[in-house]
Figure (tube, rainbow, N blue to C red):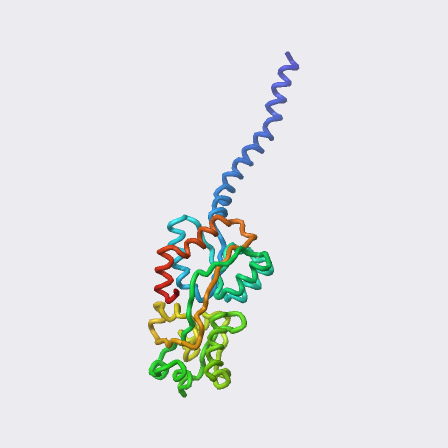
Length: 264
């Protein structure tokens, strides 16, 4: 009898730490489950700076429809390419050209790219002197136009397109000393918007934005249309959601937004 009593007392005492461990583990799971669920319902997207304004609207519409959170970073195509080569944990890359995504595909780092938009570079600025010209060439030649912003042609396709147009028209040597180089095409637009420069070579999407309506724009026929491609990165842990986003870029809603900002 004494032995049985001792056994019951010992059993209750020995179970206490085990029960305590179970309770702690259960509480930990309750805390972690929302986090894990949240992580599974989000993705990281690298977006070329020229596409920032329309993509904010597209991402918002996509999130509202799918409940999948889109974490977006904006920078130049060249910067993103270098980051991805070095292991940056993006799921989707929306480039400002076709070259960078295709290179990632050939290196085995991404699935085959798809073109999601085609854009154009324009010359944009404010002020009567700048906006009184008939062509973009006349605008940059005017004596009151001292500084013109341009995205870095080495890392930004829109900057490269502007440089190509300047060289094609024989204006490059005469204007290069007045150029202010920005890291991205979005920053190039902001330089002119803030008054830091008299004009800016920027994406048509920026010129068609609410801020862009405060100035004037000149088309640059000498600059080729810029085909922009996107790709799903092979290291992505959210491939299903990432594929849905890429397909959504061709949806009627996304197409309407792209058209509104000058993409075709």
